[in-house]
Image 1 (cartoon, rainbow, N blue to C red):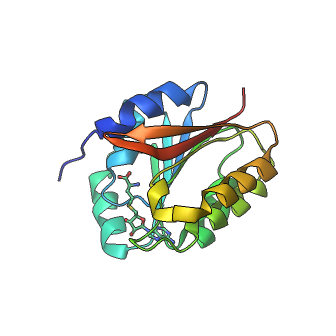
Image 2: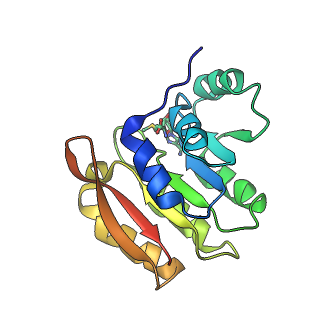
Image 3: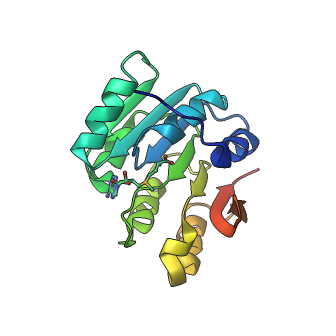
Length: 168
Ligand SMILES: C[S@@+](CC[C@H](N)C(=O)[O-])C[C@H]1O[C@@H](n2cnc3c(N)ncnc32)[C@H](O)[C@@H]1O
């Protein structure tokens, strides 16, 4: 059972990690971004996956990692519990969705807005799947903190595929 570094994400995780130690992911899938985050320098990963088979697969893959905490369930239910474990500014990798985008990132941003820290770095993947909902996404990020700097990032050959929001 192997874990792979995803080089499309590695450099961007490293570049925008800054002083963050905790990587919080929605949509664990095969665990490759969780692993990539550890390799790029994060000290702890907290991730949630809705599909039980993928959750169990990742439990097995990370069984020797006491710095990886995995949740099973819908991100909208798990994220409040995950945030209870966080008492410092962290890095979010927002990536829970199926082929058809169903508003998951928007819901997750509403939950992050309720956290007592409003300086988390937030990276959102797969923007093309959200088509015309990116402006609303940016509005939600600004509701968390007006001072967010927001940039679009490319992924491999795909332009403006991700979004990064950070506070300096
Ligand atoms: C694009 S994949 C994630 C890829 C992974 N983050 C990576 O970078 O390697 C999306 C994952 O989100 C999961 N997912 C879909 N809806 C979800 C939800 N509401 N809560 C948690 N996970 C969800 C899917 O089962 C799938 O494994």
